[in-house]
Image 1 (cartoon, rainbow, N blue to C red):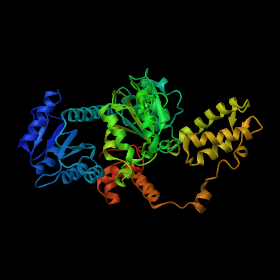
Image 2 (cartoon, rainbow, N blue to C red):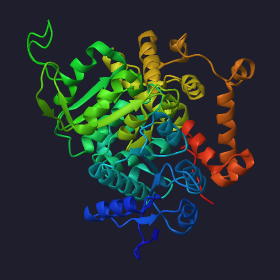
Image 3 (cartoon, one colour):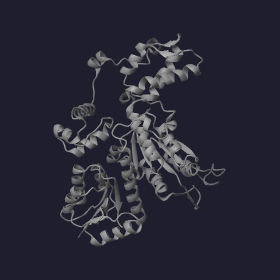
Image 4 (cartoon, helix red, strand yellow):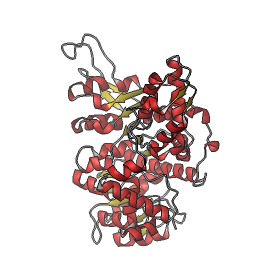
Length: 466
């Protein structure tokens, strides 16, 4: 069976069960979504991908001729930006992890829930529209194109890499997408989450920030779901949890990968069902909360090693923003340092008006592994040491390690991963960001280059497709 609508469809469904194909078509069309293209022979998929510009492909896992995993691999090699979802009658964690490692964006289990299927297709098409909207600004994003520059006034940023981040925030803020913000510790992920909330339709409702690393198995449910009076020995009064407290607003889950895997299923259920039970109660309580999560780890690697549930990641990662480390935002280092100088000089009643030139030079050389948070600590401590009206290099003694060329030449020992990252970055720069050319030089396929770009956060390079 093969059915291609006269008006091009952004959705392709691949399954050897023709009855299921027709059922999915009826479900999507009846909900007002575009009529999907249908094909029952998996060998035809790549021809259709080359001929049509699909945004989403639903792939059955077990098919004759070519399996869903085999087709997924081929699609990602040819068209890595196409969203692919594996559909299977088997609810198998290993298969879901394999699908994610090959680039799938979700994993659905048969029989398909109509509401979840419609929501998935809607989310994917909306996500594609957001990405298209961002592309309309051109490859170089600038601060002058922002619609709401005042929303970002608390974030000191002059580097062009942050202009792209701000445009992404504006694009996703008006939706109700769950968002994952990834980046090293100290890059300002929570500040970005607060801007998303401020620009959203939920801005008049609460914003709650919660560090997931601080909750043990014994207190997680009590803190997140609350309890009724008498639920346990010390429960002398009722208590609302974070979900109810943030109802109508935004719940920011910082360091989401720190949550114990045994608790991730409970979190997923509330996010999916939008309802919970307080401890000690059988009364269902409905909650309407937008989730923004943050992590300083590679979630894909956490999933592969079994530390994070793939289904929870699929649910919260409707949109991903990668915060660059400070060493990749060189133009921001001195403006941020001057901002902290002004703040901490005022707080300590000191009339220190500027940074000494040699201190500025040292700051520009320093890799700042703790990012903005570390830079603030360095400036704050130096302000206490400084006796004059200019913050000098001497005031940072023992605070700011020297990382100049001579030290690097004599002492730098790096991991194989760091060597790989630098080599890929250099090849991308030489090829002008042309991924197919870079793949050829590196001796790998294009999908591997995409994965490495994501793994090593190399999105600051201007890429070309040809």
